[in-house]
Image (cartoon, rainbow, N blue to C red):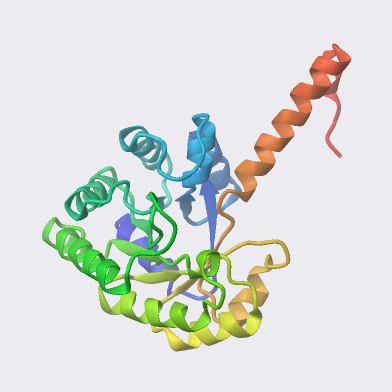
Length: 258
């Protein structure tokens, strides 16, 4: 079974897909060894690992290099977070999607946020982009490549619920495989969106929104923790190096973790 087919089936088979988010090869291999069935890269984590902030500040070639290294060294499917496509030019975004497919990714996250200004792409504009992405993928041998359409309504709007459903339905009609709604927290809204949109719903972990079994009961098909793990690792590293410098004693490196 090829990785694209395998990744698609993970969204429809029994049980919620708990996606492990990696930012380098070590984190990816660790997630695979632990038993995660698929990996999603985190653009935030990749950017931080290169000393940058999130928001398409890293060179796309460098970003793609990380994705390629992960794909080539794990046996499970990998979905790549490519933010808003690393360009404002439609043709360039499509080229970046195809390049991501070419390195062996089974899918992408692509969002409707604007990067050089606040706000979201107009629905019609984003639908047009998704349609062109799907056509290009189909014409280049990547039928069923998983396009997870992320909408940032809950990050950018005061009352996002109604527009989220509108955007989600439109994105699916335009060729997206699934919908990603980061920032949503309320159980009734999650359930309503999962029932209203005829596609797998992906939710992002947040404080108080953490339990796979509860989310599955609400109709969620995919759950990811984004940059939360990489943030924890970075915070741990910072604490340890501060302690090392303060104590000037490396014994702490050999003390068991509690």
